[in-house]
Amino acid sequence: DVKVTQSSRYLVKRTGEKVFLECVQDMDHENMFWYRQDPGLGLRLIYFSYDVKMKEKGDIPEGYSVSREKKERFSLILESASTNQTSMYLCASTAGGRANEQFFGPGTRLTVL
Amino acid sequence: AQSVTQPDIHITVSEGASLELRCNYSYGATPYLFWYVQSPGQGLQLLLKYFSGDTLVQGIKGFEAEFKRSQSSFNLRKPSVHWSDAAEYFCAVAPGGEYGNKLVFGAGTILRVKS
Image 1 (cartoon, each protein chain N blue to C red):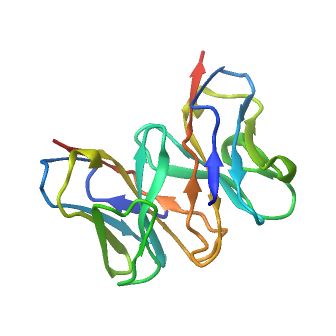
Image 2 (cartoon, rainbow over the protein chains, first blue to last red):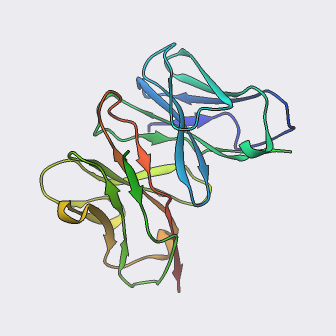
């Protein structure tokens, strides 16, 4: 059974803290994505990666960075968390190809106080 | 820019009734279209997809969707809703181009099922 796992389901952090969200996939997928989900806005793409050590900005990259040192792992970093980054964060992976399904992790609900 | 519109934020249907969730896209070329479902506390799961061929596509859990190019629509349907279908549904398009499998999502439709 294919699987995308995220390091935490719930996370509470303070304003200004550095936050790491980890995502691991076991499907040997080349492509990995980080989305942010907010009510009424759907999913918005933060960053994505098509290969190890490669990253591309999505639609809302400000305030975030990413790291992909190994094929199976894609990390989202909030350098200095702010309250407007309180949200649900979803990681996804897919094999190459436009028609391929993205597989999603369960999400991390981050609250920044 | 490519966009996806789901006009209905919430929909409530009775168990056993039929369901149609609307999706309109703005995209110049042949779109690759997807419907995903998110059950409470879960990640997203693919219901079905369309990229060519028969414009009526069948998916999992008894769902189907019809692509209508003239209306720029890809509406999701189910003939008889079950209580377990209560979830949030997202329509998405893969615009293609340099990063072909990026997805652009609609805002989602929350389905409530009443008994």
